Amino acid sequence: MDAFSGLLEGPRARGAFALRGLLASPWSLRIEADSPLTVIAMVRGGCHIAHDNGAAVSLEAGDVAITRAPGHYTVSDFSGTEPTVYIYPGQECRSPEGRSLHEEMKLGVRTWGNDLGADTLMLIGSYESMADVSERLRDALPPLLWVKGEAWESPLIQMLSDEMARDAPGQAAVLDRLLDMLLIAILRKWFERGEARELPWYQAKGDPVVGQTLKLIHKEPARPWTLASLSAEVGVSRAALARRFSETVGEPPMAFLTQWRLALAADLLCEPDQTVGTVAERVGYGSPFALSSAFKRVRGMSPQEHRERVLAGA
Image (cartoon, rainbow, N blue to C red; front, side, top):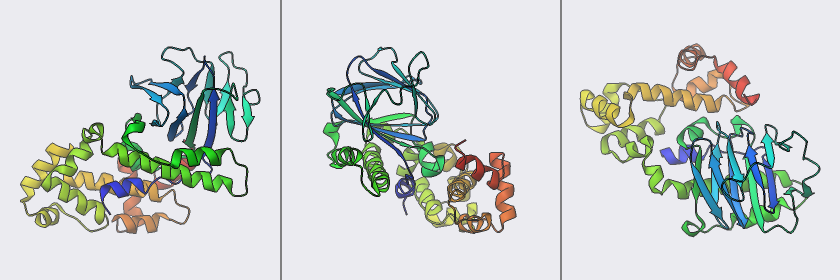
């Protein structure tokens, strides 16, 4: 499995928040919900997204954007429109004065807004649990990314819009899988863009020595790697590998191996059928105690504490 496939296998929505937004100007949504990942897709009309970190983009029909936690942002009709709705954790909607807007803005099945005839229709799909999106994927993405409609063609936006408006048995499962497919389609296209190539992990992939080392680690994380065995596999000296890897990735190869194993462990620990023992074996630790010690040393908590925090949405 290559690094990209490893990242993209992570999203698996379970009871995701899915909504069609019909909004007539003036409108502005202040998002403070802290969802792990949110997909925003424009069906018609447009919007402006301004992230608190300074990133901003204007979307039109066919354009899509993804936001990730942590971080808050504003989605509005135009840049500068003052918030008319505040979205808090649990997708709680309130007016600027604090009044609940839950019933007031309901317009039908999974449809919400201020005007059924509004020119603007957007789709919002949010992963609500950290366990539904791999830590590796979240860490690889910027707080806000987008893909313009002219850069890709996909029937998934219209399919998701149609399914959101339906009320049928098993509908939540259908929406979850469509959201996963749309997210992966967006990210595949985004990975091809120049911004993605500026990320350190993308640059490392293109280095012949470091890229091959990363492939080995990603393909066989449980193999008992040493600096000597890695350097032998890629055909360079230990000193050359250590120097080149550190310069490109920003840390020594064995330190990266530890971080990668623990990132895999963090994701696996959120799967209900996995124990600390089975996870330890899958990521290259000889015993549950060895994994627990490394996990606590690097991450400051035990594997069990991590599992409890993620499943609790912390």
